[in-house]
Image 1 (tube, rainbow over the protein chains, first blue to last red):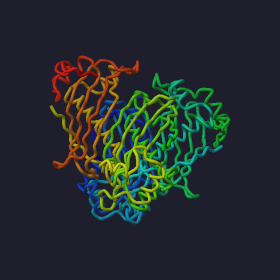
Image 2 (cartoon, chains in turn purple, green, blue, red; image 1 turned 135 degrees about the horizontal axis):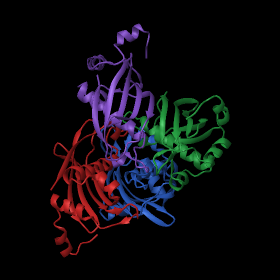
Image 3 (cartoon, rainbow over the protein chains, first blue to last red; image 1 turned 120 degrees about the vertical axis):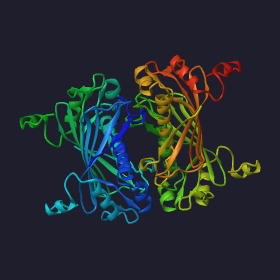
Length: 150
Length: 150
Length: 150
Length: 150
């Protein structure tokens, strides 16, 4: 139920203080979501965006930066699915290094029809792949019973 | 009690969907904080970072992306101070266009001694300038009476 | 025959050495080209790209980085047109500060039909506006007499 | 005599035309130089920059963008050493895909003492590692005989 990748902290990620400039974490987590689509969900991120014309813009995020990351470190990026709504995917993302948490984020993505520019229900192929991967916050059905929606 | 700047949405801010790639908002808001230090607080952002060796890393943020921004739009970026802690500055940031809210964020910065790499109390010159600018969430003294800290 | 803009060097432009990370210069010069289209050519960069579906990808560049730029400096960015081909625009770009040259670049852009993805002759409206602005390397007619093309 | 890496073209590398925004190539090539230091030269890029306080700023580059790269493609990035001067390293960099060249660049880096901010002779450990790797343009001794310097 967790997708993990190692990520080298590069010169280009770092600011004049020698640590990761925080907007770069969002670029790195965006890359993790792409790899998750490619390697864990086997959907092909580019096929979804370019082929199916489905975008995944972020509509909300909540983030804590607990400790800085430095150039040359090989950090671990992790992703779990917190919940699946009608058109929203809520992810829990984490960056850690040697057992130490660096960043913790909850991010809500919404499947969007790129040509119309508005939210669209999660396509069945994506929903099925994510359900196979596993949803930490419980199944969609269970969530609906509890009255959660997006 | 509010600092505002117009910002042109440029080609380099936009993603393959033709809208602002969300990490770019954090870069733009970072620029707004610099302009606030330069123009409203008259502290000189570079003088604080390079001269006083005080950094302002982000420790938490909470953000909603309500509507997309497009290349060529001139959006308004706004900043207000929500509260001032011992070493934390909590900002309310907003991006709007034609009365329509695009992004709303609360961000917590912490004054940090760059050479030691840990939080340090907000220097008096910065605290005084921010108090003169105005704190939406009430004065520091009032906050302390209510038991808030950072 | 020269378009100039002041540019503040921001925290986000700088690397762990505290100086501009060189790819950021290309982002800044790209912004200068946008401002030139908006303010000097009065064409509207976004109108050209989004409205006319004409892109301006870079096909060649030649660049020297003479001295570093530091956070907090207000540098001058300058642009002149070296020559105008059938579908290419060759620009001379410069970044300087206090009479000191920092970066010098020659860049070739090609007008491209975004929907077909290949070069297209410079639209008449763009050619006329650039000719009114002025071409340092001489008129297009003179260049053609000398046998130059693109 | 050549160092190669596969690189996935990600969403964050692409512009509103759906192709790599050219400054991103320089970020990718910068990453290739880091990997070359880490994996081929076994010097540790972060150790050189952070430990030895030796920076590698770019002083010149010459670049052709032959064909666009698209999101989802796995391109090949390649690096060869063209020549080694007293304090300069001239690299030939290429991006290709399926036998098709996309980008071709010659880039000159200069070893720099970060604390003094000026060029310094290439440290012996770096020179020896690069000579072991191989220099396409001939050995430093041969170059010196021919009177080349940097």
